[in-house]
Image (tube, rainbow, N blue to C red; front, side):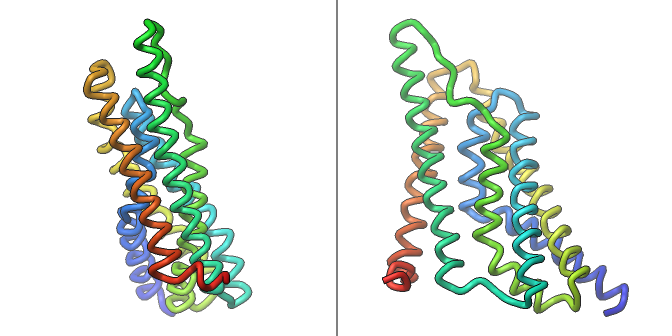
Length: 220
């Protein structure tokens, strides 16, 4: 493969990384974390940490599979996807109930902070999303590149695309939460709505994988 072809493939990988980060489960997931931020810089960094976690997982799993010239069996690939649904429900419920606890505390005259903002949560979410997406990316990478080095570069560039994309969108998502931070009557329902959307989408995600796409049957 000549230099022009490599650059072309890497450019496509970067653009695909940007597109990949915009999938609904990714945006909804990081929204529950961005909603906890009181600073725009923290929302932006949440997206960066998500992208880093996502890229590290893809690189480790992807390079291993490319080296072994193997892929992840469908049953296990779908099971990893199922973990995404569980995670979305967990973070959604955590957002809902942390917000309820704050409302309850406010009625007693003692305002307690919402669930603590944590970059570790963004990193963890990126890890899980990276695991879930590794099967498809490895198949794409193996069909695109000629060797391990090119495969690694492709995954890194793909990961860079997800970081850039998620940085932009977590910043954008964080704006309404930060602007309403001192307006409890708007901020609380907004955080609550984010948690509800994440929970409902997570349940739908699990149902679709388990029942519609037949994951449960594969394990029986």
